[in-house]
Each structure stands twice: as structure tokens, then as C-alpha cells.
Image (cartoon, rainbow, N blue to C red; front, top):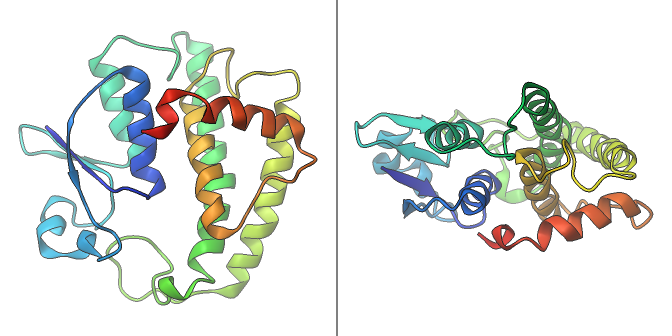
Length: 210
């Protein structure tokens, strides 16, 4: 099997960090997003949606979406704290991962894709008809981002990791989101000490550089 990857995009990075935590190595095929290689005929034959990452199995079947790819590898290898080993921890990790995606990551996408010239008529990632930018969505994203970081900072008071006592896929998702936010010039306010402490710990893990 092989993983179609991209250097700076957040979704492929989430898979890389997960695989590094699991100690799983896989063949990688790099897709150049800066030259829109993901929208070229060759890659569209792999993933007609024109998005990365994509995992091509030996059978030829392709699994898309970073979370689904990580779930696939989790099922292939011994269960770990990354997705939870008890029913309650599995639920906690899933709940926080979805919240991070829907509130934090979505906020960054709103801001980034609705105000940068590079995304003019590309308000949605992947292979779509022209999707115009909506400036009001950038404003919404900034508001959502502030609320998201404030809530996460409050949640992390007295906690080491986000969902359970162990580092998990929710932490991976949040780390990737906070780093991705820098591209949209969104930051964690200096007063949110709990979130900043958590970020330093997550970023210090070897896997964060994957």
C-alpha cells in the first residue's frame, strides 16, 4: 500500500503524526499542492475529489480522509491509547476529535479560504466548480476561533492531555489545528496558559515533526 501525502497540508500531517506515534512505516507518494498536482488527471484517478491524504491499498481500493486512514491502521495494529482502549475512552476521544474538527479546524478554514488571494474562487478544498469567497465567513471563523481556544484552555485546567489521561488522536488533531492556524494568522492568546502549556508538551513529542 502507499500513502499520498503533502508536505505542509494539515490533514496529511495528522496521518503522519499518528503513524509516527504508532511506529508504522509506509511508502509515501508526495503530491505538490503548490502546483495543484492534486487537481491533475493522474491524482484525480486516485482520488476524484482532489484532496489529500489518500491511502491506496494493494487491492487498488483507496481510503480517503485522514481520520478514516488512521482508524484503518488502528484496526490493523494492537489497540492503543491514541483511539482509546476502553469504551469510555474511545467515546471521549471521538467526542473531542469531532469538536476540534468542527469548531477549531473549521474556523481556520473559514478564515484562510475566504480572505487569501490564493484561494479566490476556491472556497472549498478539492475538485469543485468555482466556489467564491465569502468575507463574512472569515469574520465568523475569527469569532469561532476565539471561542474554541477559550473553551479548550478552560478544559485543560488541571489536565495534561485533552480527552483522557494519555496522549490521543484528539491531541494530534488539536496540535495540527493550532499549527495550521498560523497560516491564517490566528493565535492562542497569551493569557490562555493552560492551552499554551498543553501545546508546548504536544509539540515537544518526537512525532510532532513527522
